[in-house]
Image 1 (cartoon, one colour):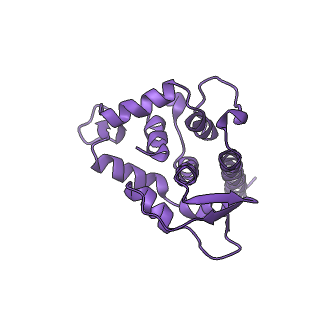
Image 2 (tube, helix red, strand yellow):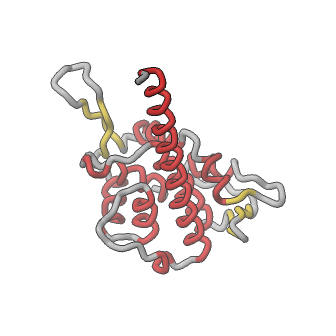
Image 3 (cartoon, rainbow, N blue to C red):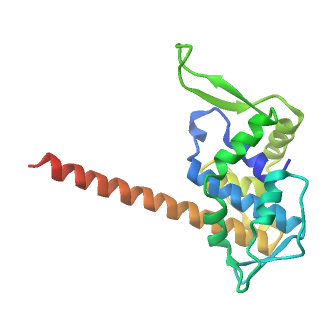
Length: 201
């Protein structure tokens, strides 16, 4: 399992206080992929830019897609730009992949047989490993989860991440999620103002 898949599984926790927006999660998943590529030596981060190494093909299909999507033209891509580009609809891609692998199961909510359904982690070795990594408060997973609003109640301590490039990626993920929230709030204000115009005095 990759960091991104572990993060997705943690985000699927059914407790309502851990509800995570798809856009926020997609940005964090793109960051998690980048951190795994850093760990594999497939990229480095130089002056907030994603510098690709030698072409590689990770065993994980989605991580392989991420590696193939790296920009190999100088001056290379900013980490922030990578998050927004790679993160587009990424949470849906991870849901499909994990459902297909049997790591997620559908659970119908409500009393009606055709009511809305959602997914939750299945009881598999991979999901148990993700849960163990979470319970051990693994710094990278905890920092990415915190970026999307899943908090273990521990203060963020980016120095525990142990790597300057990883710390940079996590910080940019936090900034991107806050930017997305600002966009949502601005749209809400604009929509409310527009509705008031039509409603009239």
